[in-house]
Picture 1 (cartoon, helix red, strand yellow):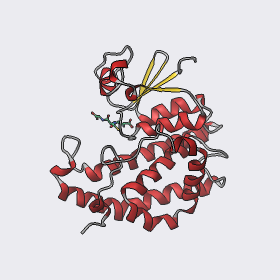
Picture 2 (cartoon, helix red, strand yellow):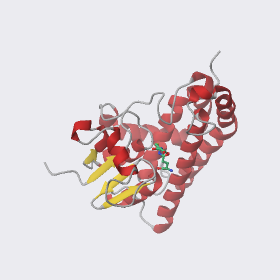
Picture 3 (cartoon, protein in one colour):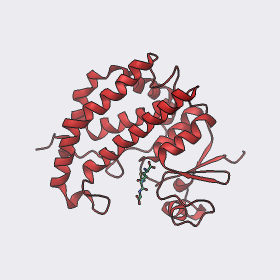
Length: 244
Ligand SMILES: N[C@@H](CCC(=O)N[C@@H](CS)C(=O)NCC(=O)O)C(=O)O
């Protein structure tokens, strides 16, 4: 079998930002190497990620994962990876205006992901959740009450504007896959708060179901990593306002 052209480098054992890239390969039926999920003895595991971020691999050093290695190119920053891969995997919209809009929406999804991360890491990456649960409660409440509905209404309006059931253009593109993943993550991390909004975003829920249908084989496979209490989307009931 021919070697995969694309290599994804991302922390093994959690979906995180790597999953947004993985979905592009899976949806387009593109062979890829998921390097850090291979055994350490074969060059995988966490050391694989560190080799890249420590500059031990030729090419520009990425600050953080996800990382895409394609030929002699080493590319980081999730929206940048999506922008690079989308036309190559036939997951980009057709014209420049729509491509710019897709990138805008992709960056916005990245903003939401950052805010979700901050609900359990309100004081930054140097702490673990258990260090500052009170701050996390405040941050998560702000997210649930002031941000979640606004973010979701924004994507819903984009789908309504496109009038084809997708965020941009007339068919599924990479940013739809990212919205799917975002909705999956929100439903996992904030089942109560998300449950209160879902009736207000019917187009987004339909998009989510359509992507799930298209990816059914992958989603049922062991290649799909489950959400947990590692990574971005974490199911702490207290942060969903539903504990106690
Ligand atoms: N803005 C970057 C964020 C990358 C990022 O924060 N990656 C996390 C994992 S999801 C990481 O590896 N962080 C390690 C660090 O920041 O030192 C992107 O969208 O790719």
